[in-house]
Length: 167
Image (cartoon, rainbow, N blue to C red):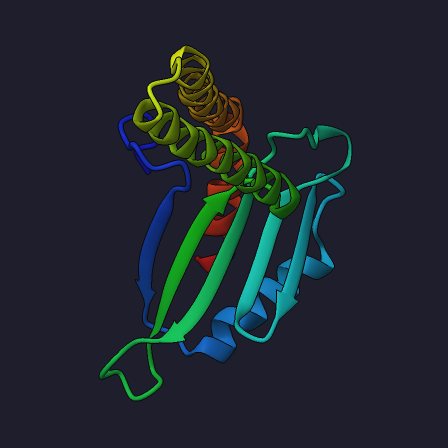
């Protein structure tokens, strides 16, 4: 999977397998029973979460979320796998929270700017705060990209384990 040239922060992949969902799910269950301490796997029906655990886990460690679905038109004989690499849910929620705070402050000061402009008051403070919020948003984006880049090696590890499981 090509990870460096994609602008999205959360990498996705799709794969079709000529086996039933139950067979593929059983492969993951069997793997979970002999899994190394370096990995953590949670299986709930057709939803699987797979990540690096133990001493190798860092705040940037990626999670691989896998959805098993019946391939359309296969009458249950094939499985469509949707995979999504992303950060830990707490990290993702924190980033989204920061984005909303920054956007909220930006919008409030945009309203102040419009009001101050209409009342012929100084708008310097409003412009400065809005500029700082735009810079903070850019820094969050760069931090997100850097976090993803730190997790490339572990993403490739998880992908290799995934490929070993489904073969």
